[in-house]
Length: 173
Image (tube, rainbow, N blue to C red; front, side, top):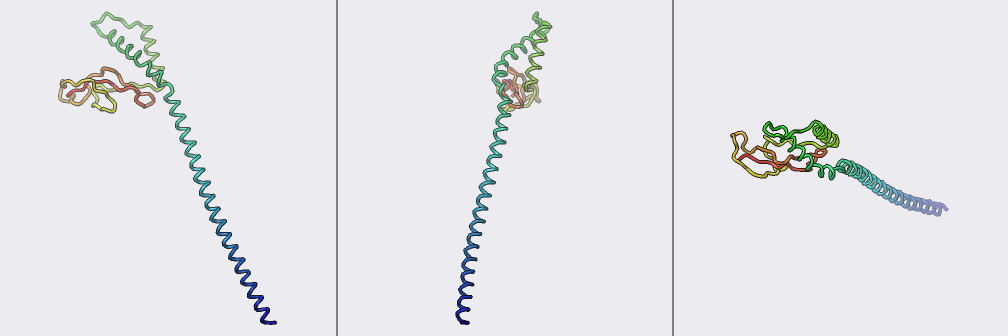
């Protein structure tokens, strides 16, 4: 009888070990599955968060540049206004820039400036091919003007800090 009890006890222990081993394997498998699910969730969450940030950024960019086509179409008008004003300011010219036209000129410029349009300063600046388009080179009148912009043929413009038209310039050599 003692032997039988020992055999039963040993069988129970082995059965418990076997059951315990199965439970441990199941727990390990469940922990691995849980870890994998957490990893997938975190990656998906990060991907979605990046998507949201990217779409918000794109939407803001589009809103900033939505008026770009209209502003670009108005640039020749601004050029004409500038030429008319320059001609009227010349003492030798008989042209006059009436007060009403000056008001319209100022209002147009201030409205476009409020929308983000800025003139590019280029005369007497160092020639930068990323900002300027060289129309021609002429001998520099003085040594300090070599490699610098001597005259601006066509004004360059920024719209919300982005170049929408490069300045056409004359460079001293």
